Length: 168
Image (cartoon, rainbow, N blue to C red; front, side):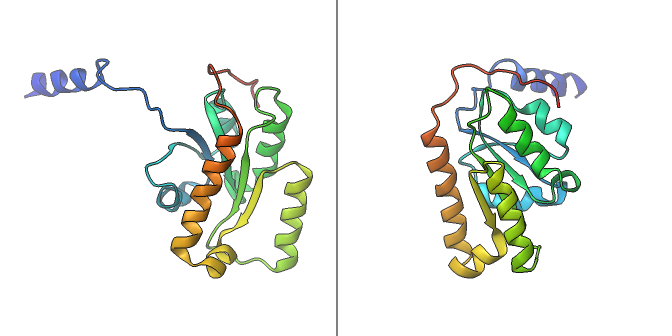
């Protein structure tokens, strides 16, 4: 039985897998936000999840088409990651979305402060998921988020080859 399992595993990994041609998104969120994020993204995108600033910087390469980061990512390092992305010549123009989680209820003044800081650092989009869903409804807000991702990556031409960024 052990030989069969080894053979089966070898066959599955032995070059039979096709390259994932879906647009690659770097998703920087807390571990507890992964299931929610997957629900929003569906199967349309190749989502690479990161839970620390260092991990996100390490996985950021020329094949990434968009970065999405939660406000609570790695104890609030959302602006550190945004600044890093904007400072690297090869990623400076990447679409970067910041999402305020559905379980966060901040005052309008706090949300406005986060939005203003994000704008100064050249974020592509900032979305307060709770207020967005309250306004559009769950299904329409998910559809709008997916369309926003599609639109953002369509504007930026795909990279021709992966490039590694400098370390964080």
